Every structure is written in C-alpha cells, then in structure tokens.
Image (cartoon, rainbow, N blue to C red; front, top):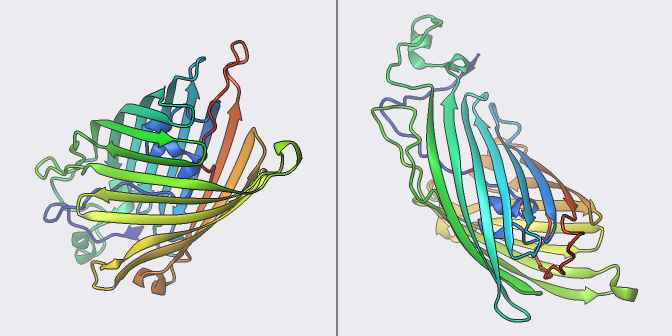
Length: 327
C-alpha cells in the first residue's frame, strides 16, 4: 500500500496535460491540422514513463491513426490516450475524432486546418491510496475522507491550423476550448484550462546522394505551450538521414523563474530514431535539470513506433512534401 498525502476536500489539484518529447512521432496529438499531412495512412504509438526512480512514476500512452482522402485534400483520424499517476490511482482517458482540410495557397505553400471532438474520463482508484486519518487510526482499512468521487466524464473540443512548405512549417492549436469540468469532487469544480500550442521548424539540406537517395538534413524545431498559468518552451535539433535520425531537445524558459525561485530549466532530451518508409521506431531519454533532478529521478524514457502505408493506389495523387520530422 502506497501512502499518498492528499486532501481533495480542502485543496484543488490543477489538471494539466502530459507532454511527450517525441510529439513529432504522433503530431496529431498537438494539432489536428496534422491529420492526413503525411499523404499516407499512419498508425503511431507513444509510451512515456517519467521520473522512474521516484515512487509512483507518471506514465502516458498515445495511439493515433490518420489518413488522407483519395484526393489528399482532407484527412481523418482518431487519437486515444491514457495517463496514470500515483500507483495508477489517478487515471485520465481520452478518445478524440479528428478531421482536417488542406488548401494549396501556391506551388510551395499549403494551409491545413483541423478540428477535433472527443470524450474524456477521469477516475481514481481509492484502494491504492492511504490517507492521513488512516495512519492516525492505526492504519485503518477505510478512510473517513468524504466528498471524493470515483470518476467523471466530459466532452472536449479543439482546433488548429498550420502553414506548410517544402522547407518550413508553422502551426498553432487550442485544445479544451470548452474548459470542461474534470473534478472528482462534485462540490469543487475544476476546469481544465485551454491548452494553447504554437510550433514550427525548418529543414536545411546538407547532402543528397545519387538519384535523390540517402538524404542528409538538419531540422530545427520548436514548440511553445501555455495552459493556465503554466508555460513551456521546447527547442530541438535533428540530424536526419533516410534511415537514421539523431536529435537533442532542451526544455525550459531560463529567462523566467520557476515556482521555487530557481531558473525555469526543466530537461535535456536525447532522441534516437530509425526505420524505412513503412516502419519507424524511436527512443528518447530526458535528463532532469531542475531541482527535482537532485533527488535522483533517473530521468524519463519514451518509446515510439509508427507504421505508414498507401491508401490511394487506385487513384494516385502526388502528395505535397512536408518537412516535419518523425521522432
């Protein structure tokens, strides 16, 4: 039995979305405008375990599917996610349907727009928790805590847009537009803040071998998120080959102070990816740089897997090249 000191009756836990280092492996998780952009059907999964040496580490799982229409102008997909924290006691599940529409602005530039509508559920397993009153009553089996529900459900809405060319991309999205109530305590509403995301990047060609094979590029990427009073900046760079990708990411906003007064320096992440045109696999490791790292968090691990296949062989339509990375 794990001791978790908490009192939902007297304080509110602020709900936040879990973030992934390899969000580019399942990009529809940050912007529905990515749906169908690859020009192929895409099935992607992400698994993250965070701060593995600390008791009750956070874990998250994403499963995403998307595909373009036969004329490559529209995209359709879905996203399934599950997040757990505290001996699996606190759990959040989401299922989201997504759709996008792509407009060719000129020969080099496209505008993609996307919408999503989903269902979410939040629950807690009280059998995995021990409250202070149980400890004070000689480890009693049942807590006297009242007013804590075991689960809640909600409807969620999001939207996004993105500009794409052969060499750069820029996008923005907003999720939880309805600020749904995700509280487990009926007497204390807890609105999930709108998650605003801006992201972009550029691809720079280094070497291209015979017949356009063995491409070697450097890709610069960034993402900024604001949710409630919390924000996060990610800066990344990749060395991208046709079968191998190496990347490094920095997470933090050192120009501002964190809640404990220290510089807002969060993590340094290393990404390794490999694969061919159909199968892609990735692994990343986050080194914790903030004060929490001094406790020996052992960092965070992420694994990604992706499968892509053609769905428009009967009506071949050339897809526009997109510069985004896969890991």
